[in-house]
Image (cartoon, rainbow, N blue to C red; front, side, top):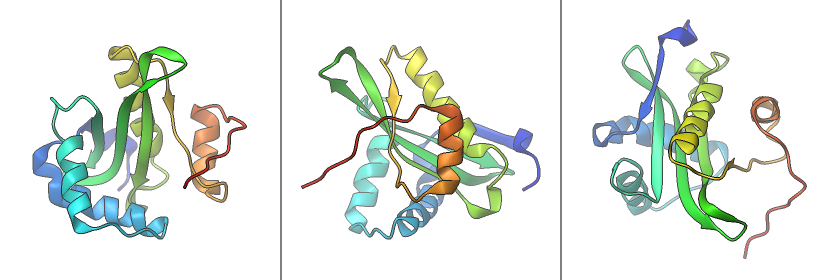
Amino acid sequence: MSQSQDVVIRPLMPADRESWEVLWRSYLDFYQSKLDPAQFDYTFERLSQPDYASMFGFVAQCQGKLVGLVNCINHDHGWHMRQVVYLQDLYVDDSARKLGIGQKLIEAVYAYADENDKANVYWMTQTTNHTARKLYDRVGQTTNFMKYVR
């Protein structure tokens, strides 16, 4: 990969299933996570269907190959009268790093939020994910909130 100008950011489509899975597995490997294979089908089906309003995804394509993904969830929020967008997963293949693709994917989510009247976009990352945080510090604002889970 040589030029970020050759990159096309577009909505995820049903025909992207195999390539999307390769990227999402790499993303999950980075976070040392494993999911049931049925979860791949469940998630992809929702992300790739334009009439499923709760989830959507974009991919980055370069020279006919998918090299990045972003998976998002639209949801109601107790502090906003409009829905918000949770940018749940963002991944760029190692072969396409340093081309600005991560930023282009986030900007596509921002554009989607603006075009669809969403109140805001938010995401989380591990505090140790220093490479991603360099990008996130440029395109977003940090908060003082910690995530807790059951």
